[in-house]
Image (cartoon, rainbow, N blue to C red; front, top):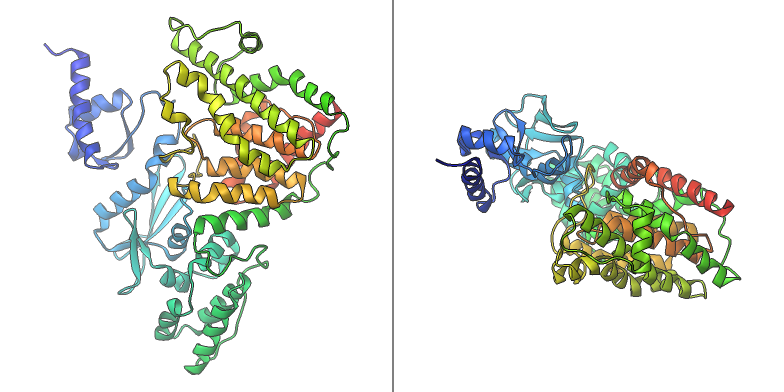
Length: 509
């Protein structure tokens, strides 16, 4: 007679066959009722709506959103294809966010369909999908990306409403920067007689420094006897104007975000004290605050550590006992890695407070920090040596966050630009806030991004003479919420004020 384990293994084999076919959105008909119920009961399947499921992890806490956010786009593509065949498309506005490589999960996905019913479809974790009965892109005006039917970039720019420029200025500027020649939009403007849209696009291109394209649109439309009035649809002039030949949406987004956010930080952070005169005293303070910092930083990541364990690890009075419980061992290895990485960060800071550029120092040293952070886990056989090889080689998702970190190739494009921005920045407060935020926004590693981000924050603090600052675990929820505001809504002010309050407190201690 088959045991419960045998039965579960059989159901998992059926699930594996679907995975091998690349299926993410699973229809009820693709698995037998027995397999569905067994896999759902054991946490390997999660029901999205009646008749539709996604893969999940048995160790995922009830109510967690990670599995859903990781599956969102592929699920929606499969669901829409099943329901509407090829007679659907994401809205022009939503198409533009995808062209701009913004893969954050929207609260409501707007879809056009010939047979749309103008009703929302409720999805998990306060997300939804709205089927608008409306026209689809014309011949030659559509494209497909990761299974999603989109308006082509030129068609989306022409069909999008004017409020999109004010509601999503970064996405719009990134999308506009991809256009390299006026001819990419002119044929659609002329064929459709879109004189008002032409004036809006001319103003938008001029806003981001693409004067030649703006002039060509106006000149050509007038030559075709259209009355055109140029109008800038943005509320502000772009703080950063993409170079004419820079088409990477990732690089342009990063530089746009940096320049726009730095204006929000100005005046909201304590004045930098300047590099310390007594450098030994500054480094001694870092040593004194270490146990507190390690406890809070590791606890924020979910490790169960105590000041006593941290002290044992720091003194070397501990070894990774293979007979210890897995959880205790993982906690102790994380604590040991944090100690080793902290020593490397301290070495970086020692150079920074003697005048070395903080951006250059962290660019040179951050890979060493990371290797020390996870070195003990590799030595203990928990992680493979390849884990220390550099930036991640797979997509990663942030627990309970609508923000989708950059893809693998985008990480490699953006990390050098990130360190360039740190080197170019003259305001210590901006380096502190955006150094931490942009690093975790990119999320360059499979694990440890939060700890690395806080290390980077403290090296930037040292560059302005600010003291080492601890983010307390008791304020973890607030910390995550203000990072989410910056990642999803491009609002850096709450995160700035959060850090400023902690730095103010550290200055008084």
